[in-house]
Image (cartoon, rainbow, N blue to C red):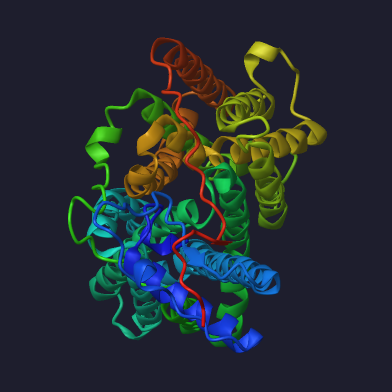
Amino acid sequence: KCWSCGPRGCEEHSQAVGAAVLGKISASVGVDIQPSARSRHHHPSQRAQPDGLLQMNVDSSDPRLGAKAGAMATRAARNSKMLVMVCINIANLVCHSVYSVLAAFFPQEAMAKGMSEDAVGVTFASFAAVIFVISPLAGRLMSMRGKVWVYIAGLLIVAFSTTCFSLASLLPSGLPFAIYCLIMRLLQGIGSAMEETAAYALIAGIEEHANVSFFLGICEISTGLGYMVGPALGGALFALGGFAAPFLLLGLALLPAAALIYYNVPMDAHRHSKDEQKADVPLRILLRNPQVMVIAIASMLANSDYAFLEPTLGGHVTAQGLASSPESIGMLFSVCSITYTLSCPIIGVLASRERFGPRPMIVTGMLLQLLGFLLIGPSPLLRLKSLQIGQLVFSLIVFGVGESMSMTPVMDDMMLSCGELADESVNALSSLMAASFSLGQMVGPLLGSALTARFSFQWASTGMALVLLTHTAVIMLTEMWSPRPRSKDNSYMELTPVNPPMVESAE
């Protein structure tokens, strides 16, 4: 299949890939194979395969030829998927490292250059804010220019802005330095929004729908690694090469991934007419779908929960006497991050449609995060005397597993909610996912700081548990009042040789 053009397929790419595969088979078996005239020119009444299936006409007189053609086609499709997943994960790791690399050294350096703490905070928060704003626009751009074009453009913007960030230390202190850093951070957010949105759409089209959660789970490994590696890598490179070293390395590291995608994945085909391909479902239609929106809000809450702990957990464990140094606090955060990273592929397998399904996993994940908030306070409702280190570590593990369960199956669940329009909704769903995740990154720290300052960490965490319980009930009620449409599974098919009766002889 021509997955880069979406599940509906592309006649031009099908012909090009088919000719290339036939050429390889001809060279390997010593037989000149050419597509027949009827296979080159489709009858006007024939419609393209809805799932983008590429079919080859192979002479069935030689069973050895048919078997070899099938094996080569399957191997080529598998290698293409592997290459795309490797490139996406490398780029995803670097882009999330770009987000987190500033934490190790930028606040100290920025304040030494005359930036206030508020300005530093705005520089950090602008990244997620831009992703929230740009993601819907990236979805519309994918409908016009294609997923691969948007993905590569996003990588190049991130690479350019990150490399240019290294020049900030050469600017005068004060306002010039602050404005330049903010502009580069905004550009990083724009590129990351394009990259992240297109990556979700590419993964949704790389494999049949039933395995979307698994592939997203694999991708979340690189996301977690990026968040964990970024601060440590930034601190080490800053110590070795100064302010510019982290930005130069990360900016240049994105270029090989962009080059591999550019040279190995065909650009999406432009739509020729409305009769040939259906138009993509716009985002405003999805916003009116209650089943899609309750899961989008659930993903926002799941992503905000960890962000809730970022500005509050350090002070809480210090007050409880469980940690005091930055290293020990960092180790506590790493417990949640490592658990999340390791559990994502497992959750992706369990959340497949053949096993438990995405919706039960999301609901269970939200309940686990609710339990984590009650234990990490601990909540006054539990009437526990104090927080013990074992209880703290257990609650962080529960957070990691719960967040993985709440976020990994989101795309697959929303595609199920779109029914037969799932394929046409991929671009808009990718935009909605990226916007929901970034909104959670913005809301979490603000909500955590505000509630903890006005009440206490114990009651603030109890309030978050109440929010999760309320939304879990909303999901269940929505399933009862507005059930999802039941439709057949539009899964993709592997590239296989076929032997239609109209095939002309290879000779």
